[in-house]
Image 1 (cartoon, rainbow, N blue to C red):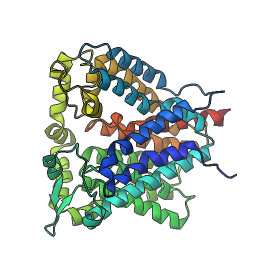
Image 2 (image 1 turned 135 degrees about the vertical axis):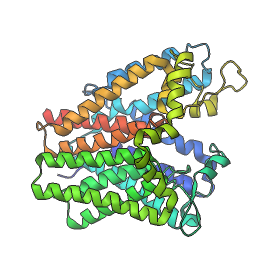
Image 3 (image 1 turned 135 degrees about the horizontal axis):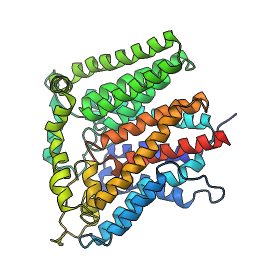
Length: 432
């Protein structure tokens, strides 16, 4: 049966590839339009969603409706920046709204697996560009980095290679140093998964595992340790799922392939990036994961659960942090100055306080529990089980990234809710 190509596939291309235009000369003038396009596409898909016979909402989506209500009520906060606050509500709705329309475009389980393969290809391209930016920076780095990133910060994202060159943490298909990390992580997990399947032709296995190795190496070179850990955990989960149902030889092959990919890619990355890359990850092992996090992002946790929580238990008013503040806030309002959020929990606290934490946290827990149940259930076919396992790993990366940055205020958040919804839609149709 021939699988049709529809809106959900085009949305994936916009979501994962469009930012690559920022690598081209002169495109910084159109940065706002390029960056806004995925969010506008999400809103357009909601407006033009199927009207009749809609599926019930996926697990966790009702909690996201509560999130939107909290945001709407936060508009009444006396320190809300009016224009920026309205923009923030629309922005957050654009991120969440694939949960309301994507299930109706899920189609069959085969189409869902093909969608994940498309996501793999898009992110493999992004991670491969990251490697090219290390070897040939003059040809593949953006001609200009984002104007929102200060020169001092951009300079701090460089490191010295063994041959003495000053290298930039690869931005991939973005204009921000280290931006290749997300694509590299997804490419690593999906490449490992598709390359480990017995049904995958030998030549395609080589391509998938090669892309996984490239993804892991790129991830090391971006030096984003939280995503590296989430990627390792995702690959470990895939091995554990294989052990539940695979033959002994297949289990050993998958586990061995994963170990070779992780170790081999590290040797590759260190040979290119040198001592800085090596120490970045080996010191985490020597100091311990929690101690390493404490020295890098720990201050933001202490601030969030201390000073910020005390000052803003019910939010600080909308439109006071992030890109909506940058583009739309009234800077003359001294009673509502710009706030800084380095991690997602801080941003949610600013936007809606403890109620925002409770609502969003509930949505994430319910959705992830549903996906994990699908990945381990024998009530559905192998295709749906595989898709659920991969979606769990991708979504886990988004959650992991929220501990080092506001990932649910980016296209990563849209990908989270899109994948949750399409899995739910495919499961409902398979059970019908």
